[in-house]
Length: 501
Image 1 (cartoon, rainbow, N blue to C red):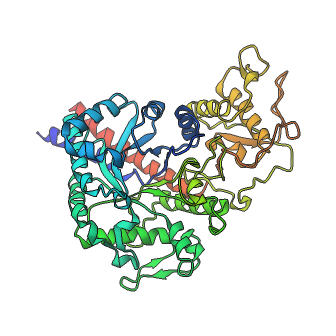
Image 2 (image 1 turned 180 degrees about the vertical axis):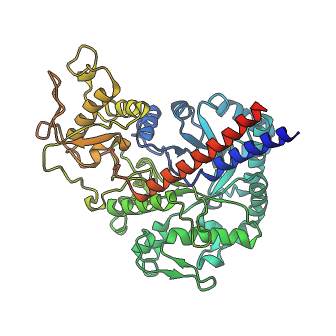
Image 3 (image 1 turned 180 degrees about the horizontal axis):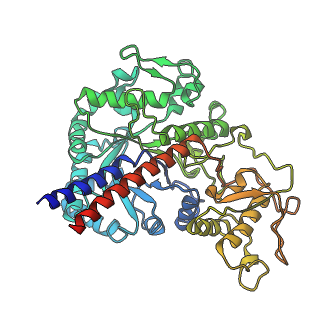
């Protein structure tokens, strides 16, 4: 009896450690309202190259689900508003949708969330009354398959779901949405699903420039905004808007529901009147956002609270209606070159002085594979460089001059350097998610000649590489990993001790 209790305790401790060490994450929204995007399989390669571990899509497209199979990337899939009626009416419709759209690809494709409806309060067809019935049917279908603990069900909202958001402590839901919000919040609380919100400080700044400073919207404010009711100090609008949601939830006595940001970002281009929509501001906002989230800063009302965030969006989407900015939220152009440099891991420092133009190396340098890079990271980087990166990798094919030595480090070094030189020998052009390093010694050997500055092809000012210099957040991450490892070993030792007796 004592042995069984000890075993249960040790297992419980292990699961607790897994949960407490998870931390906040950054994901990216993969919208497809464009007619010039790369194929889903190339998108999956791009995502892996940049170490993006979480992706949101807005439907359950078969080709996308197939492309992300066995990548380890966690997917949030969606039920579009147009499908709410069908899924809310009959359980059989929902069972069929799950059977046809999810089960054939799960668990190879790691689906972790299903969003049922998107910003329904903004929808002209007023589908809000269909959301909770559809969510309930989706959950029932998942329960039949034993997947309700692994795949969470929720719905996304715009900030318009609030009637008031400032000061944050006065945050309140719009009473006109009460008919569907109350049962939805009860559903989320009962099933431990997050309240999903799309937050855009850009719009608040654009529409109220006399009241909102640009620095405050970009996480760059030198001054603080004080909530007169709580005395809490806010240095950025993002935190203020998140706390308005928390206070709105608490006002309805929903204190255990977590908040997840399913869209946020900043456009890199806009119409003549949208002067804040620039690559510099987009880079500043998203860089500061990522660091803010990865460091588990939390908000003034919820310090240290885990907050998962999805950046909108992976690509510029040329079919989006509205002002010019609506088509320019992407981190990448459709040709997979980056609109501006950005480190999605939050562990690297982005050179903010480059703005959107890449500073070129003055001396002769080459780019090779890091000796610390893992084999799988090198393979992913080679696949990208020789594919979407447009590097000519003929030289590392069998019987070609750079094939020997036949190993990933050697082949990656050749591919990395070719991409680096073709893209202006820029600092960020040699990152490859931290697997590339610059050297000042020519790595050429025998008949294998590495490209050098001056012999490169057309130079582009946009690159898809990321900076990899280490920051304090990575040190914190290493510390967390070390602590977790020690506790894990302790837990496993306890289990081994139990087995002996």
